[in-house]
Amino acid sequence: MGFLACRTFNEEGQVAHRLVDDLEIEDLTAGDTVIRVHYSSVNYKDALGATGRGKILKQFPLNSGIDLAGEIVSSENSEFKPGQMVLVNGCGIGEQFDGGLSQYARVQSDWVIPMPEGLDAKSAMALGTAGFTAALALHRMQENNQTPDKGPIVVTGASGGVGSIAVDILSNNGFEVVAVSGRENYREFLTRLGANEVMTVEQLMLGSRPLEKARFGGVIDNVGGEVLSKLIAHVNLWGNVASIGMALSHELEATVFPFILRGVSLLGVSSTNCPMPLRRQIWQRMGNEFKPQHLDEIITEVVPLKDVSRVFDDLLDRRLSGRIVIDCQ
Ligand SMILES: NC(=O)c1ccc[n+]([C@@H]2O[C@H](COP(=O)([O-])OP(=O)(O)OC[C@H]3O[C@@H](n4cnc5c(N)ncnc54)[C@H](OP(=O)(O)O)[C@@H]3O)[C@@H](O)[C@H]2O)c1
Image (cartoon, rainbow, N blue to C red; front, side, top):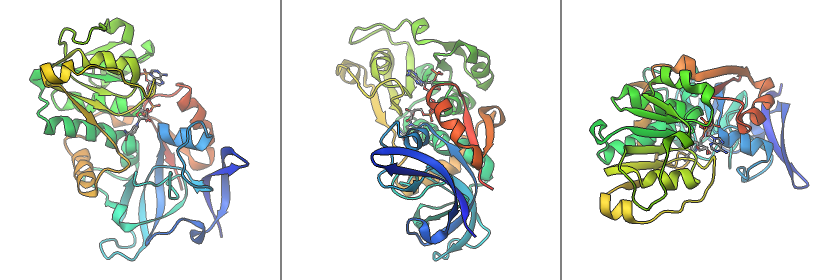
């Protein structure tokens, strides 16, 4: 009997997804491990890929979904036993290989992470790639000596998946947080998550000189473009700017002054190809000191897999906030 999946097709140049219910394990891209998926999630990238609004998928047809959590059905790797709870995020699933928006997945065992202590399948997917990326950004900043005494951390795109989790874990780890959101109605939500201030970009009153008054200890940026360019010029001595997303623009215009006169660092954050030892370390931290205190509030909705289609456009058109968890069983 077949199983259900959200599968994306390219038919005569038109990329679109549809729900199919007749897939077999043998139809999936190759792997030595089969997982019964309990939960997945919808990230910005999933929505771009499944709707064809971004060129995300590298082959067709392909099950969408860059995240999954569930139980091992079988594995050729003796580290994994049937029934064991695990997760996979990034590593090319939902892009080059069949992904997590499916009742079953077949993956390479070296992408599989045993469920970290402190998390279960649902909370792991409430975090998903968005949470992983927020945590990876803060981890990289801390490794480069970001400390609360350098000043507040600005989080842009704060009401989104990455942004809301970043606000929570920064606050929970002793940082003052300035949440920047284009949506004023999320002020209360972001304050509850731990933001000390919630502002629009306009209210931040950013200058446009190469070097501006140092007002912030660092930045976790989800939007790119002019906002990122201007923020870099306001970062304090030896602060870090983690570049995660490009919801506004992929462009970045900057001068070298903040780097050579203030020792500011621009850190790249790439969740897809994060090396496995670091990936495991970040997931361990996410079950511990990086576990958001308000994960239940950050989950906006739990949607059954059969209804996933309605989420994609809402996410891209900014009608959603926080995290959408997908119940795959
Ligand atoms: N580097 C990586 O490995 C990695 C991993 C995950 C995600 N990402 C990227 O990070 C970004 C955030 O991902 P996400 O999953 O958090 O997405 P999301 O939930 O859709 O959140 C994106 C947020 O960005 C803001 N935004 C959206 N469109 C915008 C626009 N045109 N101009 C300015 N702000 C806009 C909105 O926040 P407000 O309404 O609050 O302003 C929105 O909630 C995306 O660009 C995504 O592709 C990168």
